[in-house]
Image 1 (spheres, rainbow over the protein chains, first blue to last red):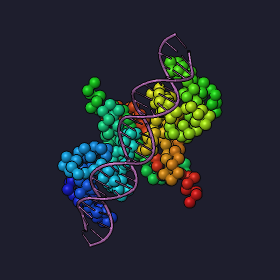
Image 2 (image 1 turned 135 degrees about the vertical axis):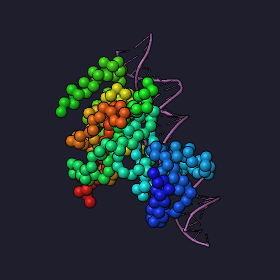
Image 3 (image 1 turned 90 degrees about the vertical axis):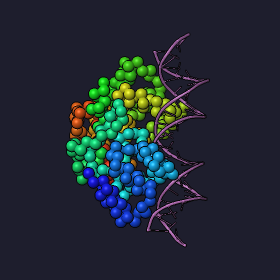
Image 4 (image 1 turned 180 degrees about the vertical axis):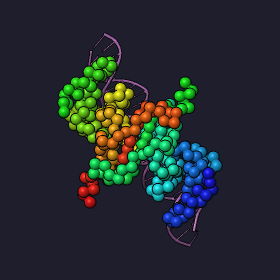
Length: 140
Length: 140
DNA sequence: ATTAGTGCAAACTATTTGCAATAAG
DNA sequence: CTTATTGCAAATAGTTTGCACTAAT
């Protein structure tokens, strides 16, 4: 998996759109590419502040909002209390373990792909499953 | 559609489970049965406080949490900022209009119905669609 | 009468915002 | 050098909680 290339690709995309390549933006992007765990803003903050102590939570929120608007990340609400962010923008289903809280990708479940439904124009879909994950099942 | 009967049914269910039938619980239940608009706690509060001025938002939250735990309502997170509540506990898809914010039921879209996926035990699913609703499309 | 539940206010959590200081080009 | 962006602190919105008072059985 070519992480360097992927990072370079996103960098180019930002530049192309006239977005200034600041340190917070680059390290958050890098973090998202390296840690595909659907992190919350807080999780990103905790992970990065060691390496970059001046980084603020506000900048993380600002950056994630920017990335979402640019279509580089997808913000989703599988947790009702906090937003999670996914660098993988290909539509796919998610599973949340009600025991450990971890979010898993489900790449093999087809997502319904409608253009319109009952007269409504469909722009995107989210499919969430909730239950107990494989790992937690084993630990019982 | 027999609302009286439905209310009586839920009342019986609460009683059976040993839940005290207080005024807030009864009027919230009645409101949910009569207004199937997936209201937020605040919407319920605004609608009911005229008729019942002593009602508090905290009681609405408490009651909704109780109902959710009892399986009488389903709490869902199609909006990332606030929870919505559905008295219809039969699994079905939802559509949210990104223009007017309204939530619609989609009863004709089949929900994937897995018992397990990739080793995870599946307990429930939510399918959300986002776009522009029929009504907003017409107003353009 | 007894216990469970309500309503208030305060607390808490996630997120947003205003603005002076800072860094990118 | 100029403008966009950051980081801080304060503000905001939704939700939860502790506790004295009240209502249900």
